[in-house]
Length: 154
Image (cartoon, rainbow, N blue to C red; front, side, top):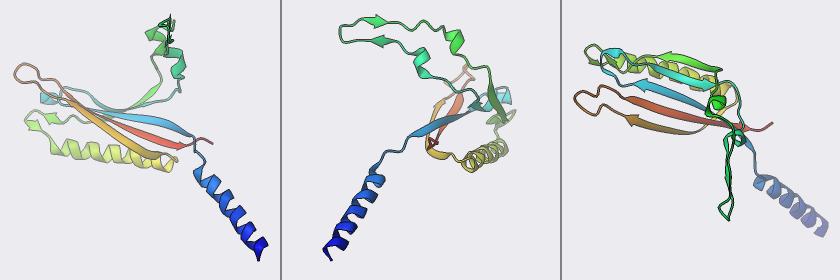
């Protein structure tokens, strides 16, 4: 009987260790930019990078004695030229806000989110922000949403 109890405790502790083990994830961000420009003249897109980057290439370091080791990589070298750009419709048309365009964008964005899920990505969090029309003479604005996905590192 005592051997069975010891075996049970051993198995329980092994399962407990596996449950508490940290899972490493890779992350991917998909950004939607929807134009808030009257007359439908803005550009709205879903943007997705194709080329992975290492943040260390753009990182400078400052130590406790305030010595600064500046990263020498130019901003131009940090720009990605390979990315997917999916067209979306603008929020406004000639007569004002266009609900048909919003519904169409929702369908396109849902399609992208569904495909990401099928590809093994879990929607981890969503962040959005607005820079809206500031009144007479401005006529500019965007609605930006970042969808952050993750999946376990293989």
